[in-house]
Length: 639
Image (cartoon, rainbow, N blue to C red; front, side):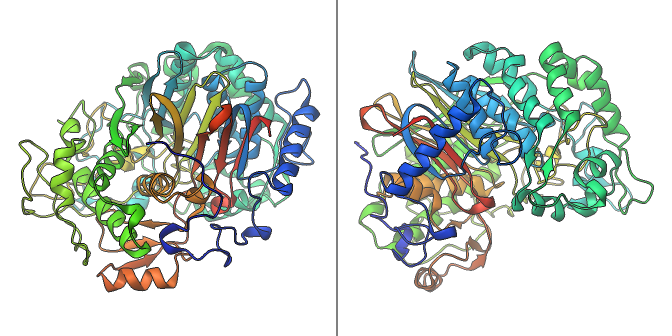
């Protein structure tokens, strides 16, 4: 299937009216909208990026924000050109990655450098206290490789670790989050080291140097950073080093002020000097363990932070895992994703398989949206029942991604009526025949935090990276390692605190050394063996639906990649209600409700970053234009 770039605004997502204030279809958006590729304003932004590159000259680490020591790097949602591309949620981080590419680094080098910079400017979503999934397309071998850098449970953790012994009931979720008990063994530093060693050209020190300089110099606080700090102020105030770092003077930093993190700058420089064994077998690891086991709680704290279970042996035994990516064929394209322990690749892939024989392009908006939501509902039912860490549970990955199983699930979709959730899972084991009736009961939708971050990078040689990294909830566990400038994750709250359905085994219960199930879905799409798209998003379980809807928008509905990323979102995860953003049109809402969909507003779903390879060697980087304050897309040589 040949996918050619349509004209911006040519298609509206699920019936979104064009030119009526919508981010899609050429209407106005925040501050009057964004430019179409090739427009005067787009060319102006391209010139600004090129000028910013000249301003930094020999310094790859000058801050991207005005007034903080370097040239101003614009926060723009789309840029097209040559020589490589980077897209992330933050202009400082994007600029660091682009400078690595300009200096001859490859996509892996740029991805690691960008991720480290996000640890500075997005410390509530990412950093060396967390983990993630790294998906890489190697242009020389035309293969996709992945690294599972997910956090692991300590060896003292058991299936009942989140059960309150006083009541016999699961801990309240917020008590699980705000505790050392929620902290998993970090995987991000090991991911960076492994990716650079296998596929990069920079040393770890070289990749961390720009972020260290950014942390020392500081960045200008924007409204998103201030708002995220304010939303976490109460719990940040309970941990002394967190309060001291993120609440200067006892309050969130003011918009327009410069936020510096000299502790993190030193930590990055020391990690570059000593290597990741400094964390996994050395002094930094001992400091992390001490912090987890005895969180530095303020005397006037409003919460009780339970001690964690991590020991130094847990760090010493940690390793990343090379996993074979998931693969599904869709409309003649090959879609690669992250295999379990993440559920992203299997769930996106299964939903695409369910839709493979559905003519979404020929449907009216409401019918197309209905099929998208029902496919997601069914795929999540199977995800919740079957997917966990494959070292601990038998995940039927091949069967879940088989077209035969998808056809069985697709035949359950009623064109005129929404199913009632939770729908039961299917039986993915062959043989596949007919339209078997659903049996049993479905599992309740588990809660996942809405944080995480995602970046994409590509280089002049055609190598591509899609990389999700996280500390789980916005602000993680709220626990900062004293003197080190980074927050620890609360990733272990991604485990089921108790079985989702007591009648059947839960694949996501805690266990020693186990990786909690994730929804992160960094995705790379190939056309005839060469990269076409890369996409991913933050947002907990909504990551999966964001990636799925973006792919459908671009591949089926003919939207530009920017329009697909910006489209008003709907998310169905086998829950009682379908979440919809306020911008979903009234007419579409009414049509879906007439089919039996129960709708519930969610103010913001996902914040994707993506890239697309265009004809004649061009590449287009795309970032979320509005959600979470908007992202930053850039290319090495803008057209």
